Image (cartoon, rainbow, N blue to C red; front, side):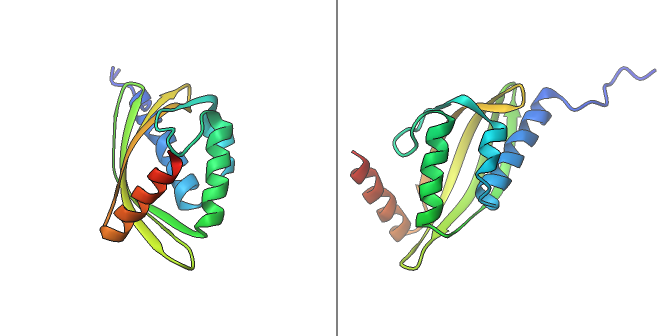
Length: 141
């Protein structure tokens, strides 16, 4: 009998959780995925914009999706190690007045099939996107 398991590794399962979350949340704008795949006591390490816990996440993105009725993402790369999944993606957000483009590296810690912690770095693409991100950051202070 072959000793190699046909079951996906924990890392592969964690990557699938993050990809499902990302595609539904940022691709389809499906906030219900937060109730399914984010822990109630979710730790948001970049809390400059997003308040802590699952409720803070949902509150922020409810407002974000109203501000930007046209948003999307394209996942470029997903890597994993243990409980951690690293994802690199392009994003855009637009309303009637302007469009911003940015790239993101997200790091999620996944435990028992749900997201429990998150870190990120965001970089605007192009002058206007960088300028708008700077303004948003200053208004948050």
